[in-house]
Image 1 (cartoon, helix red, strand yellow):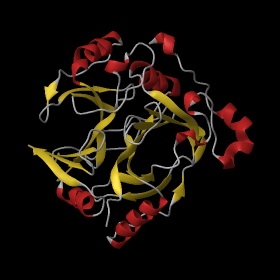
Image 2: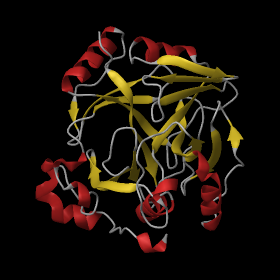
Image 3: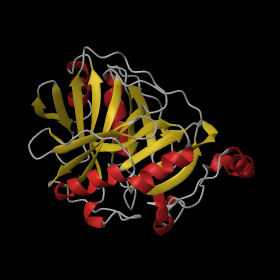
Image 4: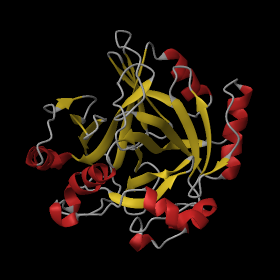
Length: 316
């Protein structure tokens, strides 16, 4: 059977104040707002999608911002760190940029060969990293004061904490087309495609408390599959392996199935099709509030329920 899962599609997290979230990810980090819409299950809550110029799988960070949300706790059974890829010669630029906006970060550390990593957190405490590397040939995206040559290329990896790596590894290798490609100490790295944007690191942390959902935590990790047919193939493999995936759900910009991995993290498999340009031109992505068709008749009520937000490139 050909490979059905190709890598990471998106990461979805919980946030607090919407404007603060938007300013951080588009302004300070320089990601593109590729879609401003609402939560399918709670249309009075925004759903923000940030990514590269086209909103390609492997670049998309999404948020449900709930104003006043209680802060969560990083821990076992949770994706705790989302890592972005930047060029190797950009370390000084990003250190100075984080300092400029009073964002605390840990000094750069080496991880695997050719990976210098700095850790910091977003306004809600979500764990983030930048990896400086020479392996990423994806294009950047310019916004605000970030030159193209220093811009974020997309994800590099994600980091999941577990008691041990074996059960999650079994799912990744036996069902989701991943291979173990590197290990160092208590870190085990898996990938469906050995390239930046696809690495899933499992960190064995038996000493850590269980994670608690809330502001500043990841809601789910989505893997990418090409289309509906390949997604059904993944679903059949999951069902036959006892993972009880959901029915296919139409998320407008992709179709999704969800299931829990053995350590408790919510996983999704999302199609790469049809993408974010299905309801607005690529050159104006994210500028207007787009609603799922079932909510369009309630637009006036929804627009009153969500707090207005604005892109502010001149501030950054």
